Picture 1 (spheres, helix red, strand yellow):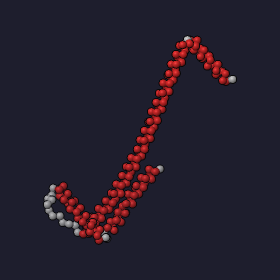
Picture 2 (tube, one colour):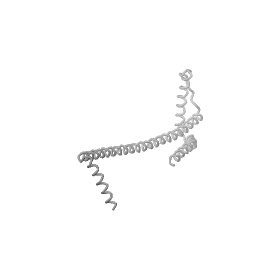
Picture 3 (tube, helix red, strand yellow):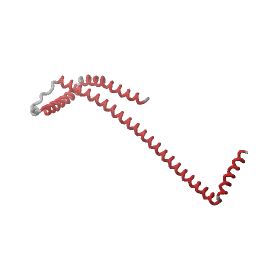
Picture 4 (cartoon, helix red, strand yellow):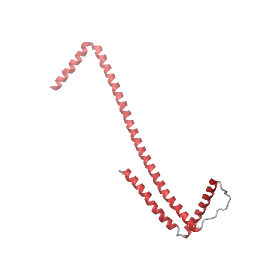
Length: 168
């Protein structure tokens, strides 16, 4: 019952993170200090992306890269922030799920070890009991050899008489 609810909660968290990321993007564009910060991030991201694309396509990389205008930079930065937020939430959910699964597996493994240990203990107990019964059988055989064949019949006869006496 808990597992489906956890998975449903994780899915709901991922789904709710998208509108929350959108709200963060809206707010980020209006605060002046934060706006300047994200414009700088967007410009740096633009330079890195452009250089990487030029290298991949075999174009000259020493060409001056024109900066984005402020509105495009803000839009690129808030999109990046939104994607990072959604990715972070999804990553945290995956990490949580993996840790929960690992704990569950550890509990199962511990239970298996305990069951195995109990079976080994029971096996050892049964082996000791078998050895004890073998030892008692050897003692009885030695007594029977000492008394001879008549001793065995007498032993059975006395055991039968004791059983009749107990019933009476």
